[in-house]
Image (cartoon, rainbow, N blue to C red; front, side, top):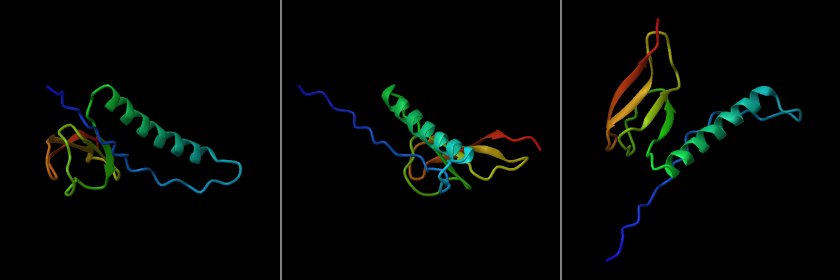
Length: 105
């Protein structure tokens, strides 16, 4: 009897808008690059440990694509009184999303 193989798909997070760095590499460029790398390595760590989490960012709740339960989308345009982001509570296309993390006003 054969054992089923679990296939994982690595979906890279949306990278921040990286600046075109001058020759002396500004601190802002280094910080943005470090953040992009942190997102990628966190996702790799999650897959390696069996956690199926997906992190992304957008200005609105996801309305397209297939998302697993537990996926988190950070709000890329947060405001006072708004939310940090959305979490997928039921996987699907696009899934069922709920806000989380109230930002004080």
